[in-house]
Every structure is written in structure tokens, then in C-alpha cells.
Image 1 (cartoon, helix red, strand yellow):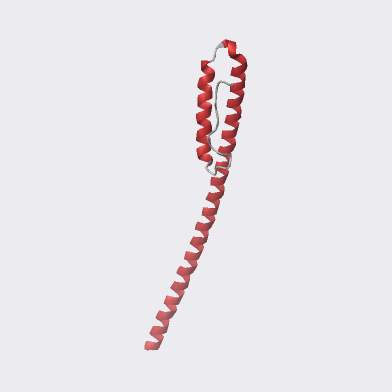
Image 2 (cartoon, rainbow, N blue to C red):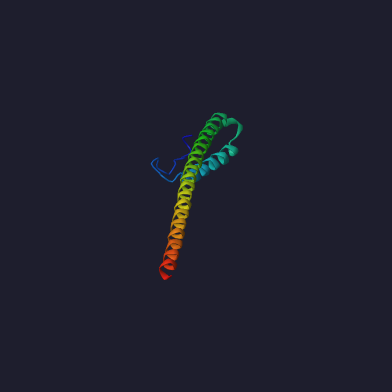
Amino acid sequence: MSDISMAVPVSKDSDRKDDLIRVLEDRVLKLETLVSALGDNQSDLRAEMRSEIASLRNQINDLKEDLENGIKALGSKVDRVMGGKAVVTALVTTATSILGSGLVHLAVSIGR
């Protein structure tokens, strides 16, 4: 593949996995286009490009799984926070209700 320059323009330290997935998908599309244009006499190059395509697809699938796992972890944290918020709200509501009733009872008792 010396005729074809296919460098990935995204660094490996990138935190943006979704951007990296898009870049890899673009690269796969370019390689598939080039493979379809190759003639029968370039079977070695075609096999090498198909191998590269398979490798890129594996990388894309791994990145997608990482993203899905991160989203699931974030979702569970949000669920816990919302559950905690509901408990705190219930406690505050109960406490204010009890205090309010007590103050009304006290005011009625003093007023007699």
C-alpha cells in the first residue's frame, strides 16, 4: 500500500471516542472504495486492504462498546442521584409537615 497514504489524523490520546469512531468509519469507507476499484491482478493489495478494513471495524466496535459502557455507568450514577434526591425531598416534606402541625397545635393550645 505504498501508493496510498491513509494516516489517521487523530492522536491516540484523544478523549473524544465518538470523533475517533467517525474518523475510522471514514477511513473504512475510503478503503472499501479503493478495494472496489482494484483490478483482479492486484489481489495481494486487495487482501491487505480487506485485512486493514477488518482491523478498523474491530477498533470501531471496541470504541462503541467502551462508549456504551460509559453511558451505562453514567446512567446508573444519575439514577442513584435521583433516588437520593427523592429520599431527601421526602424527608424534608415529612419534617416540615410534622413541624407545621406541631406549631399549629402549639398556637391553638396557647390561644386557649
